[in-house]
Length: 289
Image (tube, rainbow, N blue to C red; front, side, top):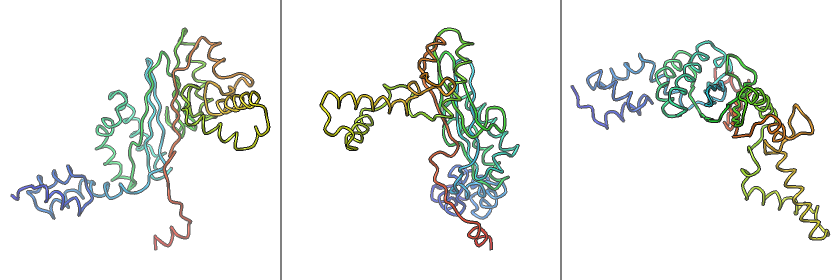
């Protein structure tokens, strides 16, 4: 039996694109025989799966779940919508949700727990996939919303809203409405205090450079800038936005009316930030030929 050296493991990895631990396992199982180890990886579907790891996976599902003041939202990607709606993929996301809850929302632990199941499904579907990102929320009440659900708690947009306050039933009711508001309005920050000074200064400079304050007295300019910043907050801050279900009233005021205070929110849009190369049909056919 050949000695399983790091050089031998690297050689097999370079040949098959499989993971280092998978290569080491393959060599151990085959007595260090490179050809047999390659066949072992192919039989296990590992080589096929890892070769696809460089392909862009921008489709998939956003999953949300919450209970007892703890919620999490995460994204599991596939390459196509067709696979994302497949029962096997939905089961994968369901299993990943359970694993995420069990691991307290730890992304890396969840990835490790789901590694074998993801690898097997890659080998079955022929598509790259993986758990991309995750966020958690802790509050007295965590409300959720899923847009365009394809299964319970899974869709293309997922939102968590954390609230503190008094009556939990009332907070849950208004929390769900605020979560729907977040999905529609896409705020960048929960509260005005969360907006960085750099962003505020940038907005002030943009307003002044526009010429709107030119020739105005200093005291008027200060009021105009303050008004502009308040308008800016109304665009990007959840508490300061006009509540979509009660026009003319800010989200913060609506929450106060229900005896609730905002803790925070999380908004996940499927594929957000992933750069996917666009190809036309002619190019795709040419590649196939």
